[in-house]
Image (cartoon, rainbow, N blue to C red; front, top):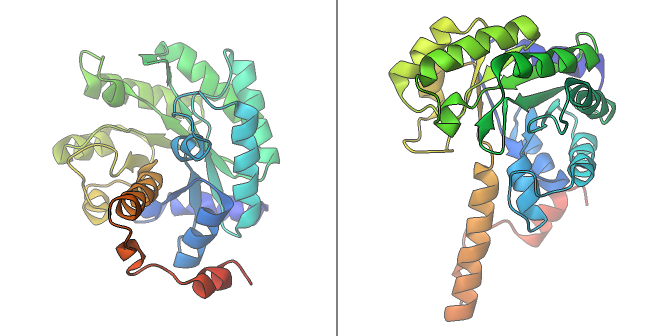
Length: 268
C-alpha cells in the first residue's frame, strides 16, 4: 500500500467515526470494498475458521500471513491486520511481526495484550507495543492496541485496568485503543473521556449489540465487527445445508446473488 493509503487510514481516526468490516479472504474483502467501505480489517477468527480450525492460535502464523497478503493485494483501500498477540514471545519478535505485516501491504494492525486467557503485565505489554511502533514504517502504520481487561473478565476493576493500560499503550506509541467486551453505554462514554486516543469498539461480539450510530454518539471513533460477518456467512451455509438435507428444497437461494452477479463483482 502507498503512503497515501496509510495517510487516508490514519485520517479516518480523526473524523466523526467509521465502521471497518472484517474480511477473511480476498473474495469477502473485494465484496466489502465494492459495498463502499473506506478501509477493511482482517479477522483472525474468520481466517482460522475458513481453514477448518478454531480461533486462538490454532492456525500457523505463516498461513495467516499468506491470507493477509492475499487480502491486502486484492483491494484498493487500506487494510488493517488482526495480528493477535503479535506472534512472538518477546518484544523483538512482535516488532518483526509488524515489519512483516507492513511488507505485505497492510497499513495498520491490532496487537493484543493477552495470550491463553491471561493479560500480560502492563509494562511487558507496553514494551511489546513500543517494539511494534519502532518496527513500523514512520507515519505508515496505524497501531491499534487491544486491551482485554473486559473481554477476559479477570480484572478486579476492569474500567480502571483498561484506562491504565490504554494510557500506557498510547505512551508506547499506539494510535488507537481497542477495547472488546464492553457493552454498557455509560462505561463506553467514560472510556472515551479517559483514554487519550481514538477508541475502537467491536460490535456484535457479545450481547447486547449496540448499533454503530449509537457508538459514534458515545464518542467511539472506530467500530469493527471481528468475526461477526464470518459467523453470519457460516450460519447461512449451515442453514442451507440443513434445508438441503432435511427437505431437499432450495429456499436458501431466495435473495441470493446470481452466478452472473458474482462473476461481475469479481471482474468477469
